[in-house]
Image (cartoon, rainbow, N blue to C red; front, side, top):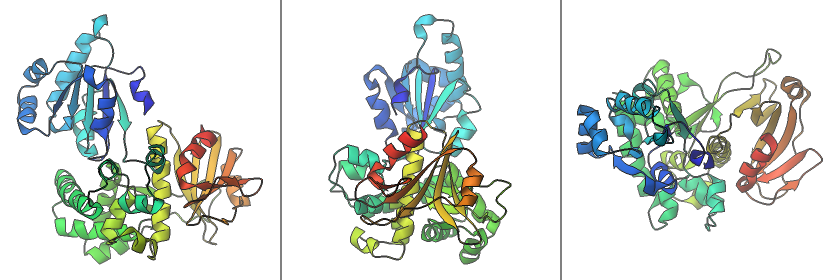
Length: 388
């Protein structure tokens, strides 16, 4: 996220799941120049909410406020300070860096008050980021553990215990409470049912029936999880020309560690032998696409393609006049190339099209004149080169 250190509006807001590395990232960006306060501290939160002017007098800018959305009364005061600073040339530059883990609070408390702000999203570590750190980690371990930085910084930590705590404290309690979810037992059941469906077409009615709640409730919960970056709905690529396409979205957890824990896997080797491993690898591929897009401030739009005649491509990523079509294959060697169907080629119009098969391992090689084999650790660089 080098663009965070480039010229910016007076306020930078960094969002993303808890324990994903937001505070650490800001510390690496001239952290010593910024005063710092966390609103996880209840005393600081109460002061910021009760008397925001006095809070900012005690904590002067440039100021880093961790979990800032917990004090909604603070943001009109931040706006006032930014407006006053615009009249003073010596005060120009980034005055406030704010983080927030709950997108619902950010939408409700921050965006309404702070128009002059840059917003960025940070996800847990990508495969590319882990491999770039020269860590001796296998892909199966990244599938099992997900991208949580603490698990790579402290390898002695139990992945199962860490993810159990994360699900119980943040996903099931913190998130559910702030989202106003009262049926906690049903919500826990839905999380398990969704984990079993990662990488698959999502039928809200089926999940609702199995959980004993309405499909409207399930859809609302999925959209809330998506808004907070815990999961994603991949929509089908659609134009008026594509009457034969299946329109049902595919569901994905954006962290394979959470999906594996909710599926109940106890170790990476047994996970690799499970019937769900193909969908888990596909989930990892989409996660890598989303993380690369957001961490490089791109505007790529990912889709999938599936027709009623079973013609299917796992991922189509569109960016301006370019596109990339990908399939995910749990393989190392002898990956088979994919070709572009006439229907999809017509739907993509005159876009420059790249083809690739994303594999578990192996080397980046040209499978034929049009299609590359791309090991998952090289996918981020391939996308940047292909889509800009």
